[in-house]
Image (tube, rainbow, N blue to C red; front, side, top):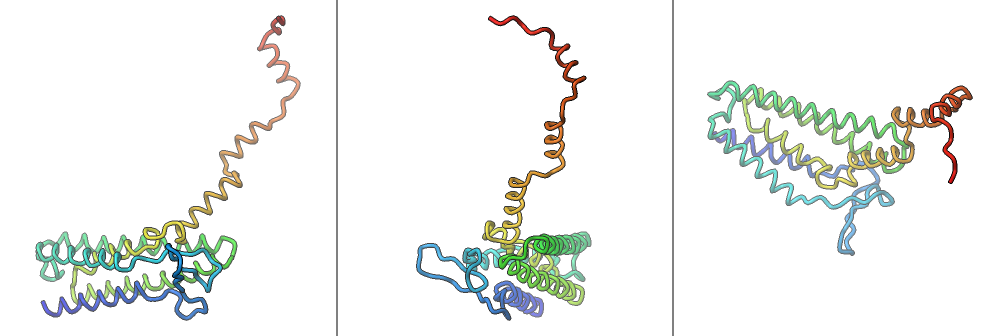
Length: 232
């Protein structure tokens, strides 16, 4: 039991250090918090980029601790803190399937957003987003492999669920939707659709509206409409 608790503590410390580490380490543009006005912003890349809201680390840490406590309490109540001594075989299979599904979905989100960012115009904001997404993708991949290895070796069950839920909670989309790369890509797509309505449906409507009327069709239309009514 002591080894299990110590391992969970180490995993929690590693997860917090990984999640709250500076994302721009190793680059010239470090994150700076500008204090002065009522609403402080965080300019990225040394300024000149879209400012991001400061992340509420205390609030996120409280949520993560609540998730960890709830998961630990649940697995203790069901006597499934360890996969080898768990009485419910379905619970082990369900937790493993949940872990693989959520981690695969998160990695797919990062890969898809990388593709979207690469297809956009390479401005300073897009380049910064590309760097951040590569760092996040690398961290997520290493973390998933590490947690799976810990589970298979030690048989610990709570880290499978806790890591997935905390990873979803830590997504920037929930904390700063407008300035996160996921939110900005969605906003830019909507703006491009409004400026350039070149979807297949709109093309058909435009083409049908611009079809020239031939003399035969004009005569047929006139005959169908009948003689003009006398004017008043």
